[in-house]
Picture 1: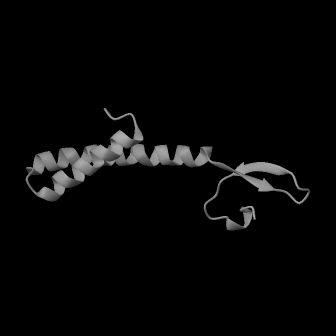
Picture 2: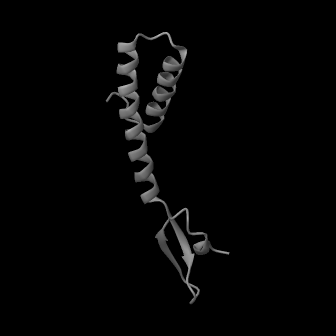
Picture 3: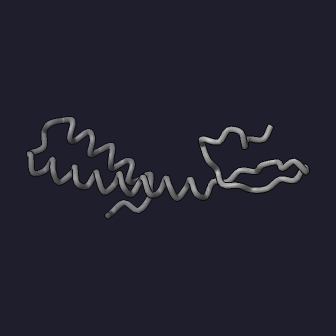
Amino acid sequence: MSATKFEDAMSRLEQIVQSLESGELSLEESIKVFEEGMKLAKFCSQKLEEAEKKVTMLVKESDGKYTQSPFDAGEEENLPG
């Protein structure tokens, strides 16, 4: 895959969507860029998962100390405040 950065992959995905929506590609070309788009989508998904694992937040414990815990977007009860 030529795109190694998330931003590059997303940009190429946008180009692919525009190409497919234009209807100007042959069936063979459409299949080729669709397959490329699927690979890019998988790459982007993996990068997002990696980033999510790296995100941590500080949680204030009952004794007043702060500890790091993995970020979980669905767990609002762990938000400080």
